[in-house]
Length: 148
Image 1 (cartoon, helix red, strand yellow):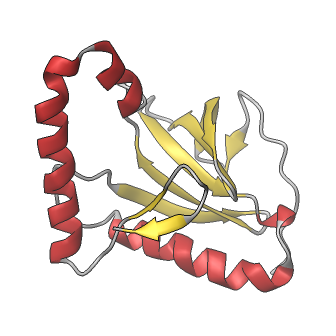
Image 2 (cartoon, rainbow, N blue to C red):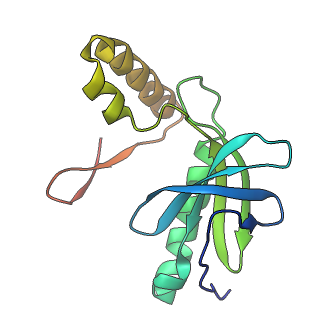
């Protein structure tokens, strides 16, 4: 499959179903957008930018992305849930629940009194993942990816 370049802007319609509200983040291989469906519900849409990577990386990245989608189907109130999966011009996307509170690090920096509650919820989420044989990855400050 050939992945074509996408220049997504506010107001664009993704896959005929999701209207882009704003770009809310980006990573090494993809971008995250706040979108809304036809009923006006807000979601986050993660889109792989496959047009930017070499062809030999396509299959491993798509496999990892599909695994992320499946992991988001786990039943736990402590995990973000996957809701839809699709492909736009050769670039896969997944639709997940939108967290209106934003980045956890910003919440913690405002009020440390909630830190024990946040830590509890994070550990519950990790427990749900580990109970299903999933391992979460993280990147430490030197840029190396590690498994917890």
